[in-house]
Image 1 (spheres, rainbow, N blue to C red):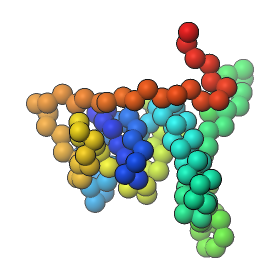
Image 2 (tube, helix red, strand yellow):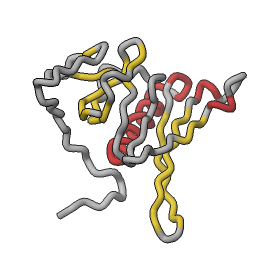
Image 3 (tube, one colour):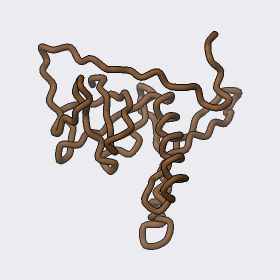
Length: 149
């Protein structure tokens, strides 16, 4: 996997890991660290508050203690599925992989890779001769999050 920037709404960009050979119709399945998942959760909930829950999936990170250790639970809620035939698929428990990364939205959110100028790259193309550069954005701390310093 390689580290790149991804987007799914022409506005919010996130650092992620992708396999550029693993895509559907040019869209990738990104894997995010927990800090980025928390940012996605904050952004998705703000979007739902502004535009309504009917057309916006929201991500929620809930932390609880198991055997004295904090354990995050990542949920993706598809509000439009709550009523109707797909109501059993309205809540997805997003499991982390062996590397501790989460595939929030998977292919359903139509994530696409961004190049170094933050332009969409659909389908993803990577030149092995050019090292992949990720433009990391400094993320603000979340409410209640401890900061170093």
